[in-house]
Amino acid sequence: MSKDCGNHGLDNEAKLRRICGGIVFLVVILGFTVLLVWAILRPTKPRFILQDVTVFAFNVSSPNLLTTNFQITAAARNPNSKIGIYYDRLHVYATYRNQQITLRTAIPPTYQGHKEDDVWSPFVYGTSVPIAPYNAVALSDEQSRGFVMLTVRADGRVRWKVGTFITGRYHIHVRCPAYINLWNKAAGTAVGDNAVKYTLVTKCSVNV
Image (cartoon, rainbow, N blue to C red; front, side, top):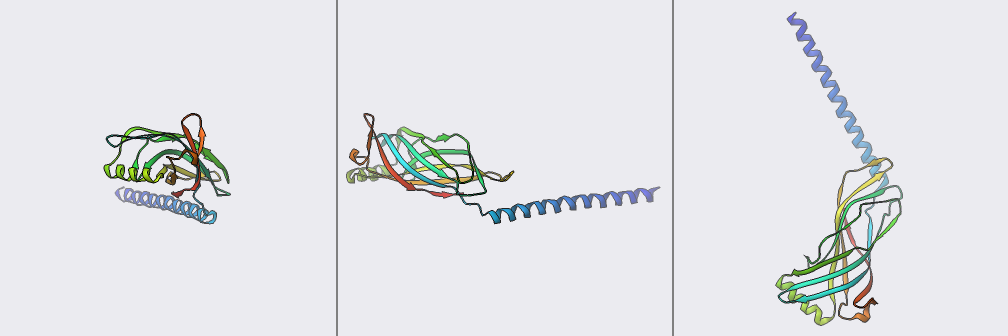
């Protein structure tokens, strides 16, 4: 009796090993297939262009407080012919010399099909935001020269869709330089009483 029980234990252990081996084999095959399809399709990260910035407010007050209110227009293009892009989360904000000067504005989640374009025009703003003393000095210098160098940023997460397969989430970081003549309204187009729209058409760097 004890001998039979021992054989049954060995048989169960062998079956368990075969099952585990089969699962591992299927996972390896599935992973290899996904990588092969991925390599063949060669997914390309989306392309962003900062089309314009409308300035409603850009005021510096003492001591080193900055109040801003912008509306930016950014265009995103999916260059892939066989891959779709899910923008699950995307927040837009502005920085000055790597210091965030506005709150983050959320872009509604969206799906971008093959070779499709999307255009977003969110508002970004900050009220009495303290800026570093050295940035205040740089901003004063730029004011005297008439131009200010801002960066419009977008951070979030995206997923790729290949057929019915959808990948996990990837971080996306977009950086758009905005070189604006804020102190010369004639360089832009008046919008209403106080706002000025500056056309830029600037290519953005995108990292995924």
